[in-house]
Length: 506
Image (cartoon, rainbow, N blue to C red; front, side, top):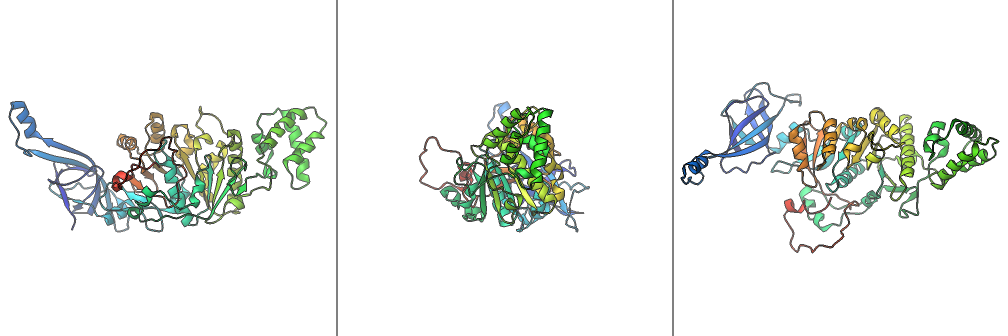
């Protein structure tokens, strides 16, 4: 039997209503409630605000008397109507207001799941719904999440990389190919089971257990910087057009040098497969004086070693059930740009031709590779914009991850139909988020600024309305935790789950 938490009173609209909270109720802001409507049946609503009044106390203080304890006190809540599910299973908004005097009940998990479209177990298990006493798992539709692009935004330390790790674990188990641009080398930790005692103690709450993943392949353009990688990442220079080649050069070259380069590429292509060394040798034999500055640029490109070795092709990176990590830790920013540009272009081109299966392309620190105007330039911006606008038609999902939303290209951010947002406090970043979310309100802004670590706002096509999710514990080890400078003394007792969730760094 559903528990009564209040009664509707006063002027009632069809979008919201006020109700007097039952004495002794533990109702909180964000809680889900339901009301039985004459025409629509059960209608779901969410508590937006709660106020406590005690007119007797105020009156007695003014007149100098002592109020009777508890006398005249009442608690009033305002609820925003979410809607009801019709016979077709669609969420609709009521057009007729509730009657004053109708009882307000605590919403049951079945109604919440059905109304908010929290999905079924075949979806991506992100965590537990915040604002409800019962455990309500949140499952997101895999196809909607991937096909229509996703952005994960948060300030440093709010749980951004941890949330990405949870998402990738789910995609691995769904056999979805994933390619990760990893500037900090933290995602290879997915191989190892979670051994954090604090998080292991919380696993039963979320219904998960520690687990490592074997189907991880780590690539790096420089094995001396990242010797633990499985394979050196070498790009295939023979797939470059003249325009692509010019983009890769560390300096801009005049038309005369472009002519020399074009001739050299034509000669090299006539011989079939070729390398950067072949192009340099052909240009060295050229009679033009313009070749010398061009050779300097090509030598700089050769020193980057990104074209050295057996080339890695999209068919190597994109395999069903495999996560390919492009570890760029320690690699110079200009070389990172070259790698991201070429990988993105080659994977997208092969996906359009059906040479690789549908995939999820995830870019960490996206503000470095798709910067907003005024925050730098990147050769990768063009192809990332193209994937954002056209990728869904070809089955290439894009995930933008950043701690500085204001510095991410607005056209890329606006193409992400689903947003997972953790705590953000910077006004410029908040403004960028509000511009990318339809129907963004000041209430949502306030909620985002006050979020606890590990709690995320999910908005977009995967949910019927914005929801807050307590991100589940990772099954695998988290590779992005902050390094402790000073070791703090450890607690000997195990704190409660609510406190514990706020202790570990995500």
